[in-house]
Image (cartoon, rainbow, N blue to C red; front, side, top):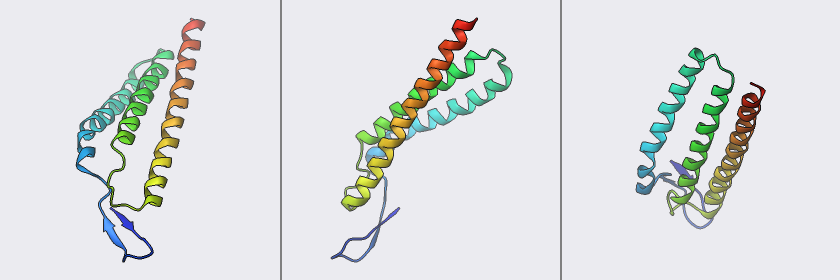
Amino acid sequence: MVVNISGDKPSEIVPLLSPEFAEILPYLNLLIILTIIANLLYLVIKIKWIPFGIETALGIASAVLLYAVLMVFPFNPALNSGTLLAIKSGLGFVLVMTLIGAAKNLLKTITLLLQK
């Protein structure tokens, strides 16, 4: 929920998520499950490049999911434009940083593979 405050109308509580967002939830749940599995694998796998490879794949999956979230944006058109811009800018920043993290992990994976 977000409080929608505009100059000429009284403030109101507006739901942040729309029905279109519900289509993304199974993928979000899958990503959470895969992240848990990856963290458990880190305890078992001793080869150094595999965790970086897994992190690369999870980073790319996260970026795709964030992109999908941006595609169904705005979550609720009843929000004021300032709130929408802030949310969209924040998601865009997180998307870029996720891609940078995935690229860094990919480079580390390749470096460790070539050192073998």
